[in-house]
Amino acid sequence: MERTLSIIKPDGVSRNLIGDIVSRFEKAGLRVAAMKKIQLTEKTAGDFYGVHRERPFFKDLVSFMISGPVVVMALEGDNAIAKNRELMGATNPKEAAPGSIRADFAESIDANTVHGSDGPDTAAEEIAFFFRPDEIL
Image 1: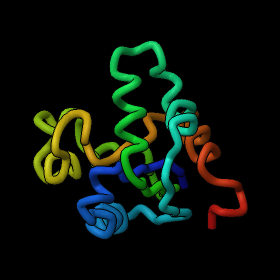
Image 2: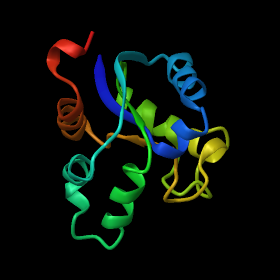
Image 3: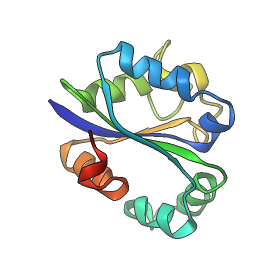
Image 4: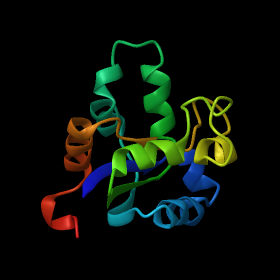
């Protein structure tokens, strides 16, 4: 059993895609172990995406992520990280596989609807960033 973090970004939340996206995770065999809808602050978004602080897109990413509420989830299941990344599709929706979340719902490379952890260490850190242990059921 593996866990990963998934975020439905402001563009996905504002377009009422939460149910469609969660349904895809569940149909693929992932279980929602924790979920909440939150509004990120500039500090929280900056801290979460701190690994990108020196990159030219950092400020735009933070601005986008605070532009509306997001849904954060801890997903679990066999090979949850790889399965989530496959379901999401490539970061650039033009390169995402047909039927992936980003191919079907993303509006651009910036407004690409979802975020997912890229490895086990990152997943553990990202889940702990948003959830206390007693919030994961």
